[in-house]
Amino acid sequence: MDQIKIGKFIAERRRKNNLTQMQLAERLGITDRAVSKWETGRAMPDSSIMLELCDILKITVNDLLCGEVVTMDNYNEELEKNLIETVKQKQQADKRLLSMEIFVGVLCVVILLAFTAVASFVQMEEWIRILLIVVGLIPFLIALPFMLKIEQTAGYYQCAECGHRYIPKYSSVFWATHMGRTRRMTCPKCGKKSWNKKVLTKE
Image (tube, rainbow, N blue to C red; front, side, top):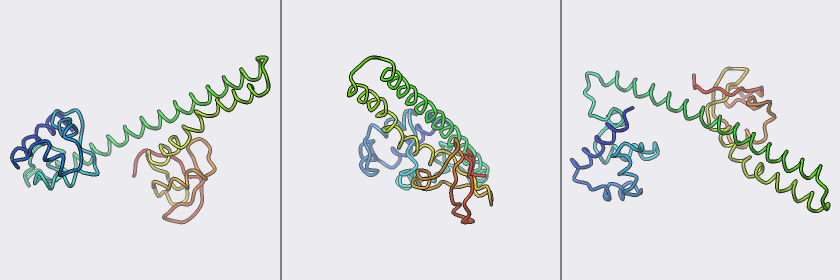
């Protein structure tokens, strides 16, 4: 998707509907700064407001993602291209999130080990030793919920029994026994409990 083209198209449609950036922003419940970012190609509208934006601009989502009003002659072809591009972008974003999860996890473990090593091998009072270990644990405890959220939402889990791919509830991920990115969970489709592995694609 060409963000510059899409931005120019949003600006063109906004003007065609006699709206200022501020008026469009107010109708969407966002800032005019966000609208400015779209129109200059620095950002894309969030999926949660895309339908409302298209309704205001009197275009379809497919038009928006193409950066032009799509004729019926090539509508299906453009729609398919946009769907493929959207799936690709989600996969890339999920890969980045999962890489970030590994980085944060490793960093937290290194911090914990460093503080524990200092507490173990350096002469100090007992209360300072305990305090050092607790301080070393804090980054890990703070990062854990965020890492689990990434684990839950980035990509999908595939049931080992029926092959169904799904995004589980946060609580399921939190309480599941796991080995790396494979978790023992109940599939919402077949209802069987098995080792579900992490995959990036829906199909």
